[in-house]
Image 1 (cartoon, helix red, strand yellow):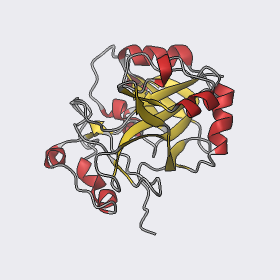
Image 2 (cartoon, helix red, strand yellow):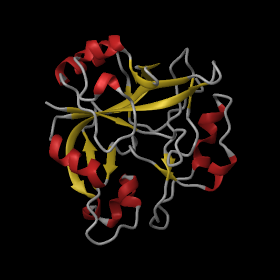
Image 3 (tube, helix red, strand yellow):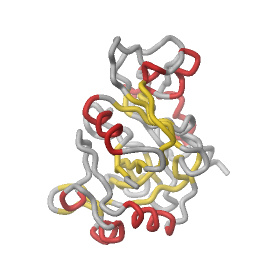
Length: 241
């Protein structure tokens, strides 16, 4: 069994929208905010950032004005239990994962209770059911993922991973894993030890073409289950209750 750790969601990088989605550091509730979409989409497949405003309002947060005219690259798509990628990362997904393996998603989130504090946390997990090329998705099913919503060129090698229902989804409450040390955000040392380590030096957390791999996948899953995770088939739940 193999597992990969993948950073997702809006962040302070240019490609990430220069903004972080919010988290309540006390309850660990959060809003999943995707990165902006940079490619042309099939008509009617657009996912607008403005759709997030009701969820953000519950955290006392408004979308930056620049986001209001943008579309989301909604990936992973927890509603459809899919994750897509391209280039080197797509190659790694195909090479390293098969049915029954897993992906762990984490994001950098802005704590609404402590201004300026970033929380690096696990926001979801997918158990692999299968993979296919985005160009092989039938037109009637294109809305399952950000990569199949794109108007792709002939020969595009974007892949879409389908996750297994019932054991995959977005976390109702995220699981903080990061800290700032040695001039970078990294997985906390106690968490790294509990996981059995990662393939990146000292738990370095970043977007990268080389996806970090869990050195002891079964040990990670045992730790994950001990956190009593609640997985939802939803990009953003109604937390008003």
